[in-house]
Length: 237
Image 1: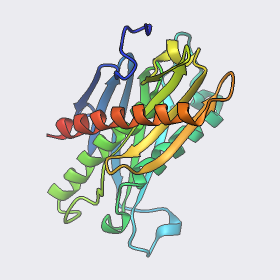
Image 2: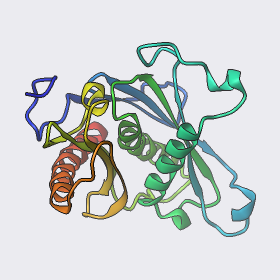
Image 3: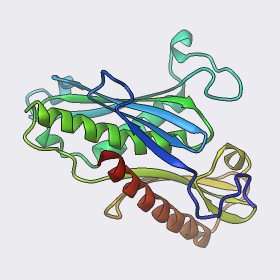
Image 4: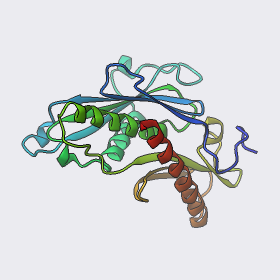
């Protein structure tokens, strides 16, 4: 039995609250179990120097955790004067994941920054950030359409992410902190609704895992993201 009482292939309770940030062009508060992430999309009418004159837009991301998002208080990275390697890795992952499903040539020369701020962390914060950021970005594109900044949404597909792992020898979907901290292996799957793979991050924590075990994790990830894609569409509806 999992600590949460869920079946091996069950997601935690997931919800999307759109329009949570009143001033952002797009925003979404995603809840996955005890993990809550506020995702906002901010539009700017300029691009980085390397894209000027190309007619292409840019999607980037920033990620952070509130000091008491976890069991003990963490220092604010701004107070330390630098971001941790983990933070930089996660925000680059979020940016790559969203750029994979956007036609940047259809954006024009504008930038959208996705801010993913973790309010409460109970495992899977990067996966929740990617899944919620897609909703926030979609809403930002709708805002741009309404204001005739773009003719139509440049979104070319959906992307979502979910964690899977080996716990007590069995493959399970959507690990919470209690499972993640003791898993024999854990992996994050970033997938598109068309079956494409954007990124897979997998690690054996104790002993190597087999190809068959990886296949089990992949099957669970596909099932989990299929449900997340449906929920994303419902949130936008």
